[in-house]
Amino acid sequence: MFARAFFAALMSSAFMVSAAQAQEVIEWWDFLGGGDGVRMKELINRFNEEHQGQIQIEATTLEWGTPFYTKVQTSAAVGEGPDVMTYHLSRLPLGVETGTLSPITEEDLANAGLATSDYQPANIDAASVDGQLYAVPFDIHSIVLYYNKDALQKAGLLGEDGLPTGLDGADNFAAALKKLQEAGYQQPLSIHDAAGDSMWRIFYSLLNQQDGKFLDDNGEFLSGDNLDKAVAATSLMASWVADGYAPPNTEYAASIARFTGGEAALHINGVWEVPTMTDLATKGELFDWGAIQLPTFFDHPATWADSHAFAIPNNQGNEMTPEHRKAVMEVIGWMAKNSTFWGSAGHLPAYNPAREDPEFQAMQPNATYASLAETAAFDPRSPLAGVASPVYDAAGNYLMPAVNGELEPQDAMEQMRDDLQGQAY
Image: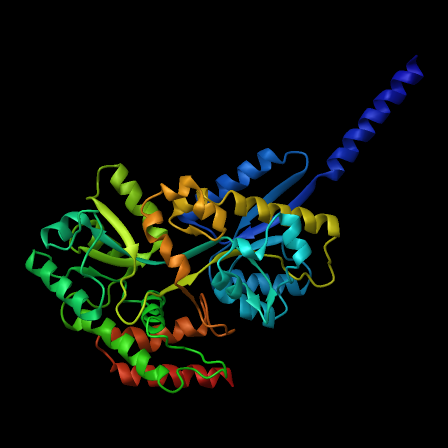
């Protein structure tokens, strides 16, 4: 009797050990702070609750920008990177060039319950290099035009549907800014013109609205008439400051404060500030506001965009087992299928069914500017481009001074071209 009971206890203990060993622990790195970080932690907690005993995510948040990408590159090179990580698609070419990223195969996608047809073609293209997928897009984040409904109503620029009217076209936009001045807004437009990153996002939108290519298929920066289109985009941005519609050299926090404080009626910024506006409005500390896709100033709609995505490091000498990789892909697939919630951070879910979900369709102002997913202009495909890149540095060195009236647009674009072309060789 004792022997039978002992054997049963031993078998039970062995089963529990086996079950514990069967659980896959996924090491996760991200760079998400603020509202993004809060929402991602909630998604991770939900995943862990639903997959208890099977798959568990152990998450670490690292510093955004250059420190993150440097750490990923050096860690993967010695086989000590995570199992999965967040990654900007704009930095994908550098990750592939340095051998930092593991290709995502059709089998991987199938294990995640995903297919490339679940995403916008431009998004898949941005997640690929030479036709090979290296990341799975999680969102599309872009810049939008925030607006004060009361201010636009007063200036006769608000339609019955609560959306702005008369803003498309460079001349019409200038006329609208003039009307807002006459309605009492001395400098009606708020932009973050004290740094290159925000200026790049607007500039790249305007360049793409003209079908301009910052980097052509031969690896040349601002070649041919692309330089003229870049000068036109820069000149338009500079005119907003020169004509007194926007103050020069405004820092990021100040640009938001000008809008939320009622000094400016319009504000160009990323969708990531939607939670800021929503929180203030919930507290009763903000006017009636909205956000729309950036107006079409030139030939057709186009807006700078990037994506947070999920990538798998190519950990040298530490190859992942097929079972573990399948668990990693299950994590990625679950995140995609639950990304409607990610829209509450202002982003557009990259996964088409999540954007088509009735919950997202009722999410405002996201649903209003969701059309930008179809006209998204992703950064040039180059190791020199993307977040915290030489292109962003060049925007700070040449584009930003031109917008603020410290450098002629023509000179700025020629210098920017020559600087980057020199780095490419």
